[in-house]
Length: 112
Image 1 (cartoon, rainbow, N blue to C red):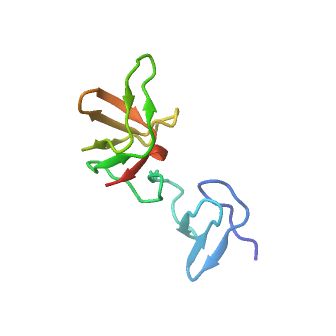
Image 2 (cartoon, rainbow, N blue to C red):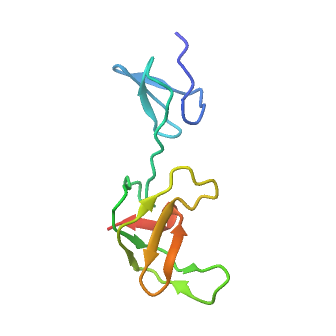
């Protein structure tokens, strides 16, 4: 029996586990016949799921474009807002104390 391609990454290496189809490349799980409408899942650098309102910690010094300021490692960012439709990779909207409003990439933060 030929299995379906992954709905998220189009991988052909999907496999069945009970009534679920699983993609080993991106980790997406779905049931056969499930609607193809996707909800975007945003994870931090360690693979933890992020949600609106979470508090995260920066894991790398981040230079701010157009400024000499730097967001230091260990900076806590409270009350984040996720941007699932971000095309440039900056999928977190936040306000950092002393710096102001900015967007961050989820790969440079960990859930606090």
